[in-house]
Amino acid sequence: MEDERSLSWRSQLQAQSRVVSRQQARDAGWPEGTIDGRLRSGTWQWLGRGAYATFTGDLSREARLWAAVLWAGPGAVLSHETAAEIHGLTDKPGAQIHVTVPAKRRPGQRQKIRGVVIHRSRCLVPEWQPPWRLPRTSVEDTVLDLVAKARTFDDAYGWISKAVGRRLTSPQRLNDALARRPRIRWRTWIAAALTDAAEGVHSPLERNYVNGVERAHGLPTARRQAKRRHGSGTRYLDNLYEQQGLCVELDGQAAHPAEGRWRDTRRDNANRVQGTETLRYGWPDVTENRCRTAAEIGAVLRRRGWTGTLRPCGPGCPAAGQAPAPGPTATPGPNAASPWPNAATAGPNAASPWPNAATAGPNAANADG
Image 1: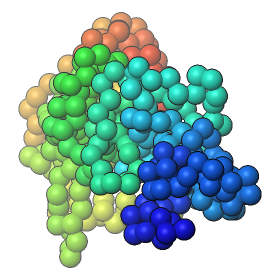
Image 2: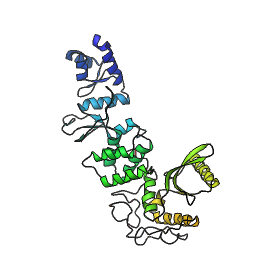
Image 3: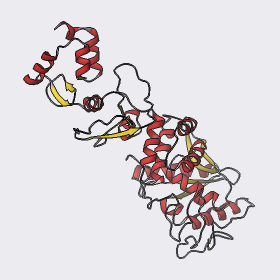
Image 4: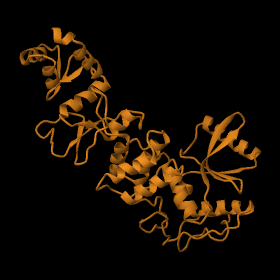
């Protein structure tokens, strides 16, 4: 058939992983009877209402994504975890394909397609794409969609920090996208988190440190992601108190592989050569043991010339005054005030001050949904 050999049709097939809609085939000159004949003969595969694979055999991942979008119909775009996959926000495909459609449309009401989740939105703004490219939400809208459905705010901040850390967007662009949404869960928290992200706070673990340890206890403000020349290379330090020559590094994994431990040791040794002492902390140190951590850091800073005074994060906080003596782990007092904006008062063993948050695990920074 001449139409199948046409440049436009062949280009469309190639761009869409050889998956097309019925309307696209008709626009290319395929008669209804010929389309139905291809389907009956098995030359084409039926993938869902009005979506066909123009080949036999298994579908690639991209072909499945095209099938979901074409099945969902006009205005449909990939969103949430699936858009994150396309944008490079996550490194592995999800089990389900997420598609968002305008609120007035209801695809799947009569017939569902297995493995496809439909979302409806009143403020859907697809990211512009060249013709025949997979339609998807923008990076900024994808991040906000994932933030809105996150189980905890630590998970939510993981999406923000990953998007900014991978240089897929900026805190300012995320703020602009946030302003365009009339309603969104955790708006005040998101705005504060974007400010932290702009200052170099690149993970939920780092944000817990900044708010729960440093700010809550009156420690001086460290320089985030401080650039340091070490030999012939450049390294970035999580939190550098330059005047006092103290570096606070945060380790998100429960246990580092041997290679990671040696890399940390080499960095700590390089800091020592330059006169900088290094303290390392993990999740428990910046959550349930944050008061003890603040006391330890305060003691080192004072020995190195800091003249400030630690303040308690709330009644019963043991951090003020001097570092606690070795012994049982110190915990916040029963009425310790949370340093996070608009947060409920922290309990004696509060592991995370985020709203409705479960205790954060050692890998909470990897919020791949």
